[in-house]
Length: 111
Image 1 (cartoon, rainbow, N blue to C red):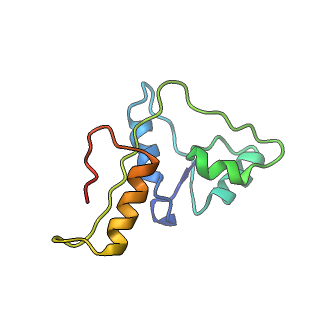
Image 2: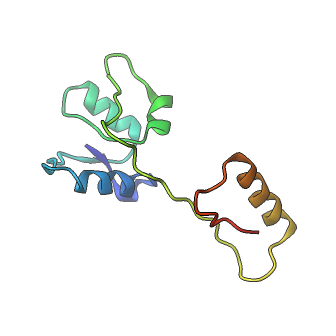
């Protein structure tokens, strides 16, 4: 089971990309509207689900085993979009906070 692309889960496309690279393509039994519905169906024995770890950790349920996929986790790219030109003070502060938390490998985030 996977989250439906229109369900507001930004991770849907990332999970799809990981599954596309699998040696054997999984059979998608259902696309659910929320992680809560997914966990309910998994708990009822309808199949297995795929979700992003940060989302699943807050929705743990008794009787459901949550396991990471083997291998190196795929890279997640996040972008800041703002108007061209000199950024506002709020945008500068936000970029500064992001930079202080984790410097990107390619140095792409600029002020």
